[in-house]
Image (tube, rainbow, N blue to C red):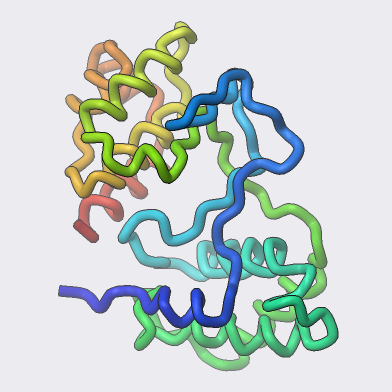
Amino acid sequence: MSQGRNLKWLDNKRVIYYRNPITDLPSESTDLYDYYAEGTFECYSLFRSKAKITTYKSLKWHLHVLYYLNYDGVDGDEISLEDDMQYIFKFIANKENGFVTFFIKQNLLNNMIKEVFNAGDTPPRNRRRRVIFKPAAYHLTLSEKLSIVGTLIGRSKMVTQDMIYDAMLSINEKQDKITYNKLADYFKCSTRTIYRNIGKQLKLEKELLNKEL
């Protein structure tokens, strides 16, 4: 069994690693979810699943998101932002803390951190999200969530990679294994449609999410 992430350390430091959209407005909002018909890139949700960071590229993206979300200062302290974030980045990159699956050389990590700092408050590239569940939806079963998202996204005739990614997260969040049959049931389509639209990157992410269950 792999070591779990030390999220408590981040929480104690009041590090922000989740943020809902701030300017995009939902097309529909209920007590359980927000639905964005055109999708939103403004939802950042790190460490939502159990899948760990497996590549340098993914690590750099996670560090960029953390810097972007905490740009106004960790725990309200703007003066020592870069010192604070460098300390946090090194904690994330330390394999012993359960966030990454590999060891990274110090000089490589230092260069990565410099590149993140140079990006400033530029929004990191992000996936489009259409359905964002609220904390009140935590009690919903997997089938109930699938039913809600399937109904909402089913209004569109196309099954895109962004939609498949939403479905994968919903299935994984309930600690269930992601399969092509479940994704097909999710969208009320054939497994062939899923195979045709999922893409190499999501296939890899599917494997990583299932591996960490």
